[in-house]
Length: 325
Image 1: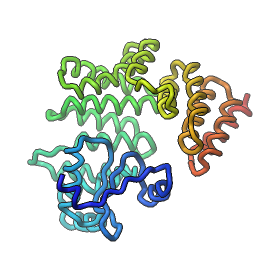
Image 2 (image 1 turned 30 degrees about the vertical axis):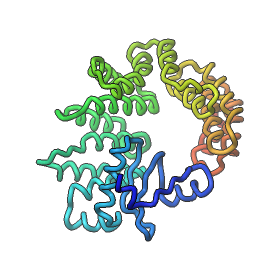
Image 3 (image 1 turned 30 degrees about the horizontal axis):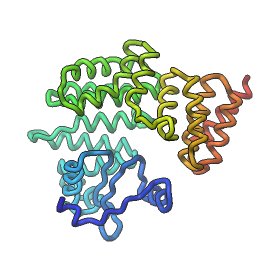
Image 4 (image 1 turned 90 degrees about the vertical axis):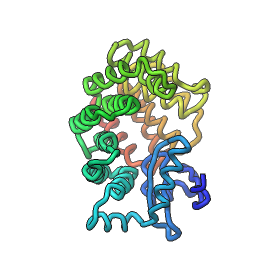
């Protein structure tokens, strides 16, 4: 843990105080994001995602061992490319949602890793799939990256589950059931006999999706989804929203989902959290053909978080839907 003695830890809540402005300055796109800055405020390294303490310390140590800035690494890479610099630059762009740049650098890292024990096919898949959530890559490109990662002999069971989970999230967003089914089948099959506790936890999180999209049993899927929720989920606005959004994306259990989203709105404090739940509620009302309420709740979402760019766009669409009735 000696690495912690060489840095000043500064935890920031992205929704309070200095958080929103600092996130904007650093282009933070997801939580948690870790940004290693030098004393001049220049970025040396950045990464994201939850991990165990030993992996976090390893990441931090790697950043401290090469205190050059990202700009210096980019300049150095242009004249003398190395796998290490390619990986750092890829991570930098990935955590800023600059997925085309991230995939480019991960691709370079993969080439430079030849003959070593490092492999970046899974990282390439993650960045490609994240980019496919927007407009950077297509669903077909995400599938291709997934298949390449799965074809690698050194892939891990954890990666198989990760690919299944990511492709399911992507397929649900794009409303493409067929894209996720093969990965869900593979993950559930390969993990069935694993004795690893973490693997079984990951597997359990996929059971509801398997029931919904492979078995096509909606009631079973909803019941399994509830099994993995925390005991207090019906009293927590964020957790209520998470479950309601899960139902919305799956187009299942929408009546209960609407009721729970309404409850979440009542429990949430004003601000981004309430706006997100109002957005969920508006989306559910829209797919349930209640265009008037969809417009109403989207108007409230815009008022609750006026800085969000996507809410006014949705409001405009919902108003068009209502006018067309």
